[in-house]
Length: 330
Image 1 (cartoon, rainbow, N blue to C red):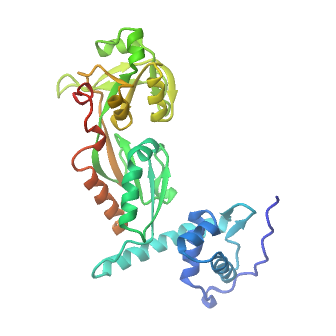
Image 2 (image 1 turned 120 degrees about the horizontal axis):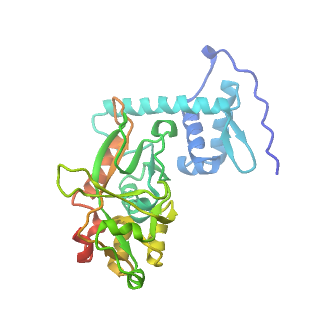
Image 3 (image 1 turned 60 degrees about the horizontal axis):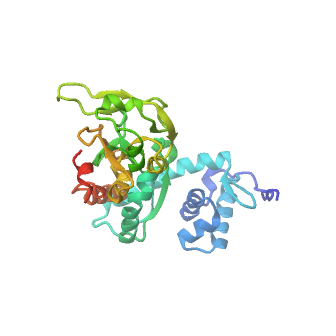
């Protein structure tokens, strides 16, 4: 079906005579973030007619079309996008001002936009975030699963969970825990051919690698002495995938060696569908960070969630508990 035509909006009036309401602006922000009137109305606990009326009133006041309406989607117009970006910043300033002068902060409210790695979210972080959401029922969470390092400011994110060695940036990073990695394969693959007895023998094997890195990449291992650089081995990436759980499944199917984070491989190691290869070698670990923009004032919402995740991981990574001895000896 073709998009519904926009209603006529009269030319904007002189700014000094405008009569606008902040709740209309808040509703507009929520509609953009929720992707539509229905979802926004549910989050705001308002009827769709009230949300639509607030949008119409705001457009009427400004004298411009802020949203492009179709039968299925609502997206910002060019002016609407500019207005959204500016008003989102204004909302953040207001939130910060309220938090900074409050004698005792009340229940967390508003919304947190968080970007997280896909496999870590589905396997572990989802449970932590759902527990956090139950503790703070008035707080809205918008979780974006993406393995790419998205621009937090441009994407409008309050917080990111990132895994790896972070590049230099102006972002603030708080370490949550280490993320150890292991080389593994299926018992069937181990029966079909002799497993490597040294890291130099890895290159002779089929390897399963991460597609966000180029094929034929380096696998890096801890140095033999603290003052020496890491040891690197060039692997032949027989299969690549852009998802760690898919890489794990290829390894379980007997298609080669994979180097995987323990948070992905741990359950398969416990079940015996994967075995630890070269258990005396230690692939370089990654680090799991909470990352947020560097500003003069960090919102209470962000600080509370980062503290909560830090507490959940303070005693080490829970996925490493009760691993087979060949896995926890790394």
